[in-house]
Length: 387
Ligand SMILES: Cc1cc2nc3c(=O)[nH]c(=O)nc-3n(C[C@H](O)[C@H](O)[C@H](O)COP(=O)(O)OP(=O)(O)OC[C@H]3O[C@@H](n4cnc5c(N)ncnc54)[C@H](O)[C@@H]3O)c2cc1C
Image (tube, rainbow, N blue to C red; front, top):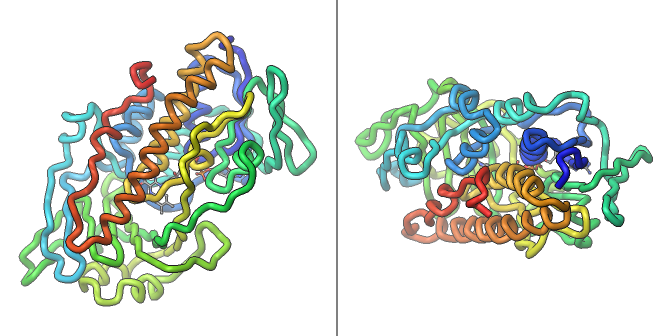
């Protein structure tokens, strides 16, 4: 596709910014339209598997994120009630040796800022709420709430789980409540308990990734911000989710009530948490194709998934890079979009479904070993061999 072709991106989240950076790198003209008045990300942690780090490498951001993030030394799994050790597996250096890139844990705001640093201000329009899209012969148009329009050779919906672009392409449908709610919070690294288990028999390092697993939920904790902060993701089975919002403020008390009876060392850490937020986790069925005419999707707009494999943002960044690579490889936009669809929809759909399986497995007693993520980590969205 001609290098100066114009791509209009709707949404400046992690997926939209990764796509913008990759498209600029491949010589395309890009315009980004974001509904929020300011750019930024919520204060929470994010796991970046080797497949995500390979995208960051392709964008020239690997070193910056290695500095800002952490590479946990081990993966430790503890039993929810007595904190006995289920398993401890080496992480530091291991994923890089096996899959060609490390497993990092980061603050979402650091990742978002790194991607944002590659995007010139002049191509981002803030406060622009997309209300519809239309594919025309050889072009596409996005319409906005203020009456304005943006036309490009291609329009990309990177507008998250409640995507307007997806609805315009494939009709309305409600995201599915998955039966999981979760809290996220952060604590100072000094608050992490280091002596747990029966009689204090299990030593935990603050540089380790720790998962507490019980039949009603799991709590994932890891260091971020070069080891200065500790991120807590607490997921729990629930039968209903009444809130309209995607993420709502919560309290330490709410989180403690949800985990009553769990190990005291873990609850002690919850007690010093600040800024607690709560989510109802929704996903959707995999879509067989993401494209109609000159409009396509990426990220959560295309494949919202459960966080149980920690892959939503990673797959969104892969989408962004793969979109640029496929458009650059093909002389015409339609062929490039078709190749993008063929490459991405099956992979993302498989991860969406495995994330559900992982959720089901976590609830089994005793829980089976984690599902295989090797095929996810091995992938490199920056190379044509991924196609
Ligand atoms: C609790 C939790 C933990 C997670 N942990 C991980 C993890 O460890 N690792 C991982 O890889 N993933 C994780 N994820 C998933 C990850 O957060 C998402 O998959 C990822 O943020 C999706 O990025 P996105 O850019 O597609 O969508 P979003 O981040 O939702 O961005 C969409 C953007 O579009 C804008 N927008 C929306 N509608 C419009 C409109 N009409 N017009 C203009 N702009 C619009 C929004 O304001 C937003 O900026 C987690 C998710 C949750 C809920």
